[in-house]
Image (cartoon, rainbow, N blue to C red; front, top):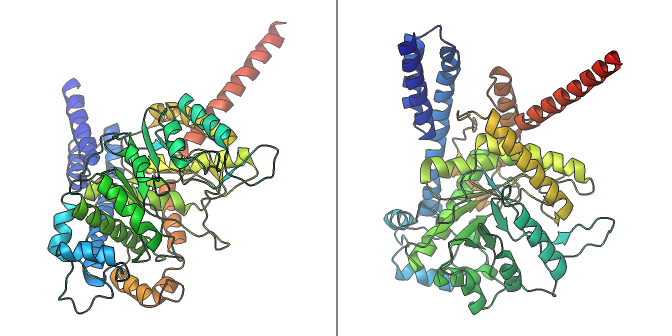
Length: 500
């Protein structure tokens, strides 16, 4: 019996190890062998469900491969509109990066061999990497929410310093400190960075408002990322050309940001949205490697969604799952370090409700898995506000959630069932030709894509005990602990009264 149990455990461990390497068909073979040799074992009960999931995960991985492949096709077949940026054109022309023989591209296409050459030079490690599911602040909300006050204003020097000192008290819960809130004229961005430097782990800030000497403060620092952007809607942002190129030339570790919004600045289908964002980040990587080969680039593709009212909504349940998909694309396929978004909320004036909703989002992200996660602590109002009160509560909740997660977690990778879109290239080209997604047929054909995706995930959650219900397993576990605690207290009271 002992020998048989050992063999089961070895097979089970082999399956889990294959899952961790994203080798899902190898994991399936181990589960099948377990089921064949020991069909009546408890492990076989799990293996039956895992075999089905391995096929779903393999399909999901295939979609991510296609997204990566199609993103490269966007850059070589459709191109990026940089024709109005002479400095960008000169950089790529001098590098012989542009496909001058293309006769079907809408914009400026890259040569396929040059694209591959540059992307192969992007480092796949990050010296100051805080690890997977590292939750932090970010987005630089313009307003600081002050208890009992209605004034809308950024933080002053004293308030910002208090926020940073508080962040340093929660380093066990805070994986990354991205500039938490905008500041007024009493403190510059550089002075903000100097205060943030007290935080011992990974930090992020934008340097576009700094002098050359101030921006160089980040150069050679493994614990800092310079958040920058250049491309949106397949074209460049003129105001970002100079700060982007300066950060690259200084050799700062870059966080390459793309915040495309489904149905607003990008496609409506999840696969097409991820593809366009991925293409735009890859273009920034190519430009960075052309100027400064080997420069660290963190993939900051952050897909966003519109709410029912037509505005950006961090309360939308699609926000965490699309960001998990973006993270998986990089963790499973490209190997690039990545930063995602989530764990925030659209709620403003109800801190307890905002804290609760943020935790729901964080734990959905945690169970599907992400890398570096910005905006998860202290932000509310769809990234328009930062609340120190909420930040502290978020950190406390995160500390407790991690404690529960360590006890309740499993090592299984759970399928995300990313919906397929076989018309990605055609759809993105149509959106580019029509000047946006609003009047594109591709948008109309995918108007309910995110709803159908969430519906499929909810149905899958009903079938398997280890599948993450979108309501949040950590919350369920905590509520159970609280109920048990109340029941124990009631029992003690009854016993006391009985003894009396």
